[in-house]
Length: 494
Ligand code: BG6
Image (cartoon, rainbow, N blue to C red; front, top):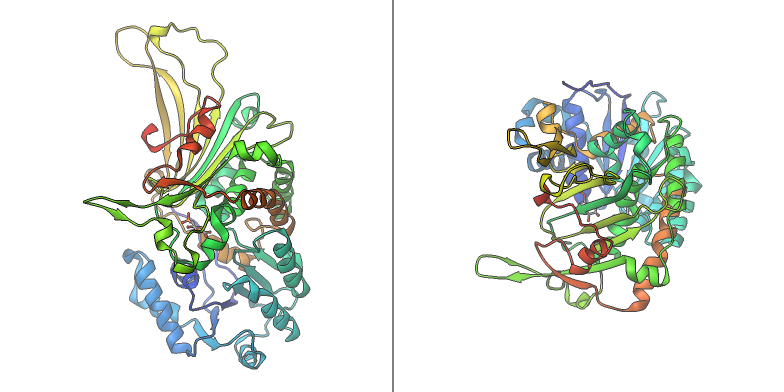
């Protein structure tokens, strides 16, 4: 089945941070894929802004190199690339220096038919000066949009500050806060799975579900981004991506898929998260930090080795596991085990819905014990959905139970490439669809749950537990779930 391409209105996309890593690795390739698919109106323009003293030609060269590096070669098409890069222009601008701003007005079209969007792919301390200036210059007319990249603060107070500053220039319905996990195909598929199939909803609750697992494992390290050591896995992954996934799994069916209907339901989940404090916090959270391996055939540095000298000894966590609980009727007593980490055994993100066992087995011990059903939603890689269930082992020899899975593999079922999250999100901004973006109250509610955890960890002044690269995290994260008589679902279970 091939996808339908619905062209969007012409736009002026102004990208602050045009020479940055995010723009090169994600934004330009995503826009290229949509351009190649024929989704652009050819009057659309992308205006790059950054401090470097470049010109339009150089920006176009940056776009070209970004495609060569980050777009799969089979999608390289010389004519299309030429056409695409000609949409780019550039303004050199130190956003803290007001003199540099005049040129933007020459690039922006004052045409109501052309959607105007400002993408802030810059450090959050620049959001306020940028928005203040945009407002001062009257660039943020009523239908203009602003896109904010994370980190949207490092705690509730800083997040409120950012939101207040942006809110001075743009109203909430003009603000698009990116959580790129919401743009992933498989994450959107959660909505279809839950709300376009009648069979799951009646059993999607504590009466039938034993527990839920959400794992986002990465095999890459934290890298040398200075930001990571300030953030750590709790702020970098749990506060946003994983809590958003948890909301989509746990929320009540919204009345429609209109942005606010969905976001209202997500907000209720965040408000129902049981605060983790005191003994609960000690028992139900695990922090880890990877340590390297040095063997004959392989050498991988530890997190500490990767840090510059002034940060050595850092207690920043590169792994987190948490047993979370949602205090409402639907989920009372159902733990949500969440974990994420860098340099783990594999790159793998998945959600596991573990159903309860049959109340009584009619089979003898020799015939096998029925394992509880399990629904595994694989977000990446090998996107798909697997339903683990019991059957009779075929053939003679009497009744023997066996666990098998129904496998809906996206790669096998659909011939199309699975689009990158940013492809959807960048054009949703132009469409004016906020469904897959975080509303201010959601963001702030998530910080309210995260802040006490962070504060308690900081107060403890304990080093995170070490784990060896290429494993599934510290042993205490295994203990976290095993002491409840449960186990993490892992690759070998396939
Ligand atoms: C980002 C985090 O938001 O998500 C990174 O800052 C992380 O640390 C990345 O590596 C993971 O995204 P994905 O799409 O590769 O799973």
